[in-house]
Image 1 (cartoon, rainbow, N blue to C red):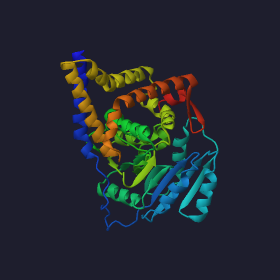
Image 2: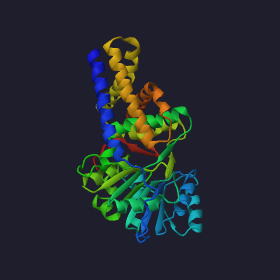
Image 3: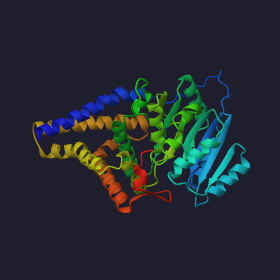
Image 4: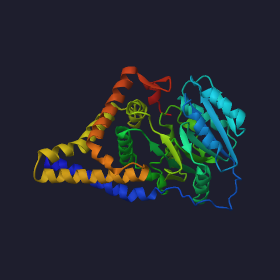
Length: 382
């Protein structure tokens, strides 16, 4: 038992050191980066895919219309919505000539809806630079101008911004912080900023700015038509192709409500967690065991053992908590006090993995945004 707890403590020590080295490379986008010599000569096309987004699409599009960057084209793709999304888009198009709409009525075989909608929107775009954002994102008035300046000043091909993820209630906010904590050591997002490597890469659906030539060089969204984590895949394809990318935080400049409730978050993770484990039952099993062993078990041994096991348990909890705090401070505006919920949040996350695996295989696939995608389609190698 002593050796097991020691290994867990060493694991969290390595994770903490890795984060302390990597996270500083992820800087906040600067508010003073505007280069007055750079006029709005580049045409920027913003592509928004919307499926049943009646509650949020108006605010999102208005925040785009209000951007300080003048040479802006807004393309909103209504992807088979069943609510009032289409009517809202049509109303906004009548009032704002910079908004152009595309309405999709059928989903072609071999595509996931959002991937297809973004692909269709990109084909209609005329800009030298493309921006893909989710339909529930709120941007402040200078977000695109600042991102364009960062793209040019840093001479990068792809820029993705992490938003301020908002949520209501202690448990939902805690789960958001926990998700980012786990994502940070599983995906190591700072690899996006390491120019000497083609491994890793990062893309966040809230905001991705990419040069048109780069987007077509990686094959557009047609390169990964059935991948539900399309945003991450875009960043990974950019990195793999050897293009230069940057991940920066934009907490003060764009925000998105992650999910309205904790229950909605668990339903949403049906799509993402299993996909991140490549739809492998074996990997999912190890992920569940690994989560409970590394994140819950030290609290148990801290209370039930004495001597070295108790000491190593305390060290494991200390290193894990420090990692949670620095990730929370980097990517959110939440209190670090959510770290006190770590053992319970880890159990909840392990449950979410088991739930996603069970429901996916029980149903033979996933239901996402009103469409069913079979497990065979999701496992397809694009």
